[in-house]
Image (cartoon, rainbow, N blue to C red; front, top):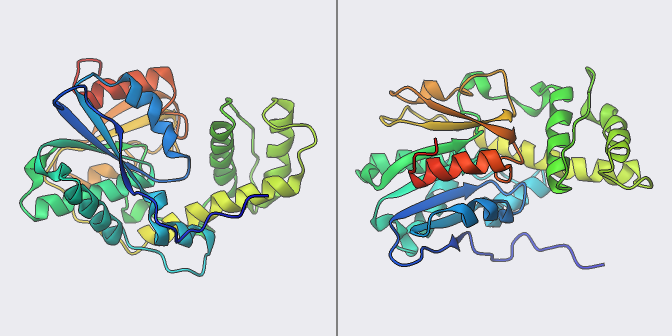
Length: 295
């Protein structure tokens, strides 16, 4: 058995995922939340126009952010500190010297928002061509929830989407009302085996371990977001919302409270965890991020 990765080991937070063929006509910087591997962006990267470069800011490679998911006793890094780290990375690579589009997926969208706020506050807001949030929940009081207040059935539905994405297979399961998510894990296991997602000999203990790791990341994100109180931005926001959003019935996920402009909402196929692979969603994202007429 290979040793467990050291969460304090240095790994690059910023990397060039796709270079432009020649001078970059457009640059995209994406904030990746780290729940799934950064390779999720590769389908999108391969579809971008030849003159477009894609840079990835992988929060999963920020040691204190990763540690906070593995150990609930570890202090949660602040949104401001994560945004400052990302800005330092962009400055070191001299990416903040010319216009770019900033995108953030899930929790990465909250960090992207704070990056935009800091650029605006320091008079560098013109660097941002657009701020695009991929199924991110706004950090406003109406949408902040402690772990104890999150609905158990909803959490298991999110976990099922995540499990399907990890296994690269569509996965749905009906979850009844539950007292705690762990009470429904056997339903997820039975459905995953029945749909060929997991082998028939998969043990419930193994699924519990995977759920605990997943829940640790969600709890870490909640702890990071809880004290964050952003002000509104004087700029347009674009929200990309998949058919199976984390909160499908919640409109623009609270972002209209953080912009002086109407929030532009783009609806795409797929779910929260497959939206960077679903062909229809990728087609829309390519047009949106690269500035073509697809969307």
